Image (cartoon, rainbow over all chains, first blue to last red; front, side):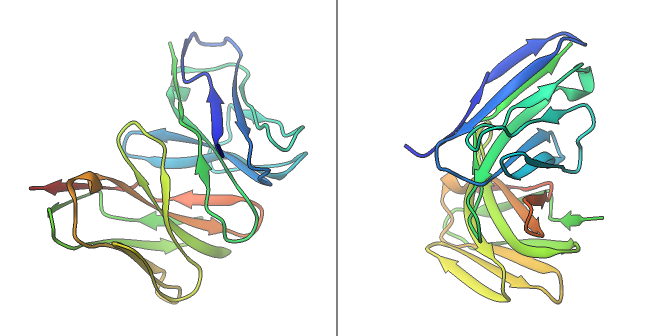
Length: 112
Length: 110
């Protein structure tokens, strides 16, 4: 089954404790992105990648890092999480051309 | 910068037609997408426009005018299950950048 998976789905952590949210897709897609979604603010792009070793900042990259060492994986790293990073996070992937994005199920992160 | 506007909330009656508008001001426009998102779930793709005109897909249609920076999503024969948030998104350039509007929450009433 074609899908985007994220882990963990839910995470409660404390300020300053490094964490990684994994994202993997099995569709051989070139493009991958991370978004956060907060009430009333829609989806905001954090980082995106157009292929292995090619990443770029989205609209809200502060406090986040990403890597794209393999085509299928695109982990999101929070080196020192803060409460303002409490949010719902979505990973997405798409193929080239006019293709649409496929979203993972989301990761609900709470930083206390 | 990039700016996308859509109404926050709309209400419609089951069986009716509703139009959700989206206006955008962006540089590097490379297509406009509509997604549906039910509460607590991931967005799912509805439609795509890159050229001016109407794209029809079953009960859903989407229209684009690039010169006006305007799109709309038309939902016909509304069903209760159409109650959801509808997200307008613009693709910028070819490197993977996308900007989303804040979404329109549609409530379908019996």
